[in-house]
Image (cartoon, rainbow, N blue to C red):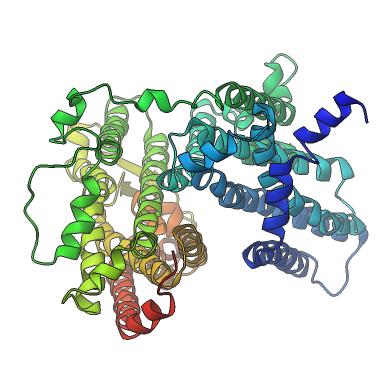
Length: 611
């Protein structure tokens, strides 16, 4: 075999690292369940869409083609969403395992070259994601029998999803090669992917609203969902004309080229630094205590002594709330979120007060900001709680705690109390921003000529209704639902952490459960609020996201109640729904906590010795 061909094969198909990862991953039951669930979700959604859109007694060819095209759009969006969710899960092992210094020390003693190490890790872990895409190809081809779906659109949607998977994979490998990442970086990586998608979509919506142009923006080029939208909805989301920039004329091609270019750059950088220690030298301690650690009252990194602290009555609660701020990185991340959130909230209100935003822009920006912050906080709550017990089982701390007089009830109650206490400063950001906006509406916009009021048309053709820019009661309603919901997220994470063998499995399971529950509840609450009179406003408060949306844009969120009854009844129903939602979440929290206390000893003994 020619030397050049053998070298090229060792970079990919016969790379020993890639072969090891594919062989080991193919034997794991969890991977089989993920693949099966992926295909099952796509099949169910396709059948449901075909039944809804093509379930009439008689259909002509045009109706069949329309049903097929609509179903294809649904599963195309769902597929790229699942890929963006599952890609970080499959690539998490690259960060958590290969980031270990011992793993790198052994790996660098082998005769493998730098390119073989980097590409082997990438191809080995990317194989499972690309296999998911290929497994669903027959399902997409089946849609063509109904007509209305060109083959070019199918392959273009696969290309968008594949480029997104490659980009996520190369970022994960680059984090592992840098040697600065670890198990804690897995969740930060996951949150960063979700946050990036949400922020770019929010900016795209704001740009289109501000400019009055419903077409593509520069965010379309850097977001796979928006690129797919430009591909599948050319009439509602048109591309730029020939006089516009090339990237806006061809957003799908620009996204593919851009993502592959960034991936190539990251792989080249990783290849050049993999044998030089990555970026670990940046974290080196040159002696003494750095000034930024002194500001937060921390000692030198790795020091054997630390300043004394005052412990709470429940030491477990104190450890979860206070001891999590024991490192500079955690303190910086937490308070950076608080500072940026406060600054962003004030900036949005000031933009409206000074006239930079009109009422619609203000409501859109405020809704995206608050909902995005709540999603990030919920993910942080799930990550911390899902690793609270499994991490202690892995490092042996749980065995020591079980020898103390601490009971299962006080142990679990302390975990819940401490984690919620740690989240309170972060929760103060969206709740405080909403309270500040409510106060601004109560004061009439501090002397604005319009009194911070907006007009919404009535379906009956009567005079338009005058509504405050934000419902004044929002400052009181949001905590009633948000705080119990975050406690619910914490309890779900604790439950998975208690019964899971490792931290990654517990985080993935908890995120999946909370995501499905909140997604189903949120979708039902959103649809009910818009269509169902009175009762729809009660149901709209079941989800924190729909509650915030109802408080900021009641004319759209509670359209059914306002059109068929009155605005006052809709607001009263929203108050009742908030109280009911908070009570329901607290009841679920109490039930799950009681069940965990009852089965604590059995579960701990069952998993004893597993690390």
